[in-house]
Length: 286
Image (cartoon, rainbow, N blue to C red; front, side, top):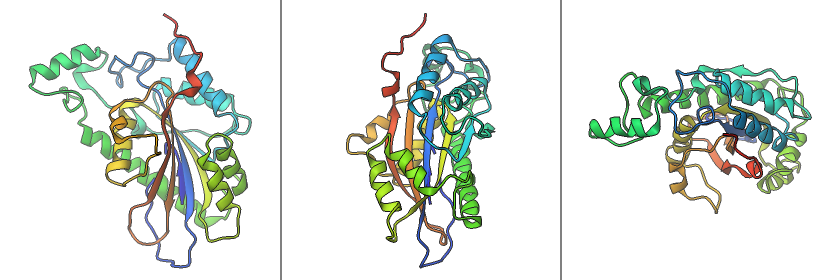
């Protein structure tokens, strides 16, 4: 099974003749409202003027993509982000969005609303370094990872169950339309489309999932994909780039194959990570 986006690891069924399905995960991150140097989960602020420009650009970039499922953090800035993406969509304007608190940004406890400089000072005083330092009342990186993995497994299981109930995607969109949608934006999608539209025993793309979340949260989740699930990266992407937090509206795309049956790791291929080409020409407003 192949998942997009952002973003999947479902259990498997031992059916040796089963053709693996594919799910594509589209992850769009919004790094703490407009100012990435501010720690925000508890401070539920709306987008800034620059933020609205950025999400509009992301919506235009993704307007030809056919999504079968849409998930978002339940914070205001991500709700506004997903609304803009769907508003610009040619196919998904009326899609139902599932808001999930498991997609929230990392909780920073007493450092909520403070600047990165203050967080670093707190870490230094405690004899630690960012991002490993956990302010009082905040979440550890392991706790953030657990939230991400929990959502990932839930999503994979959901797609597996739906794929077992019907051959087409849950939205009713023909499978080949999903591959075409992917191929229009990313070269790798052309390979997927040709394979999935052939009569060979290739994987079938059954879902295209948009997940809108936050920078620090996604950095932790993507590290899980690469380290724990051995996700393959594009030739132009290095593991060291995982140390970087996604820019506002950075787009990451993953194709995930899962064969029903045994409890084994899904095969994950990263198409792109933290893509920001759509932000070219977007000017910041002071």
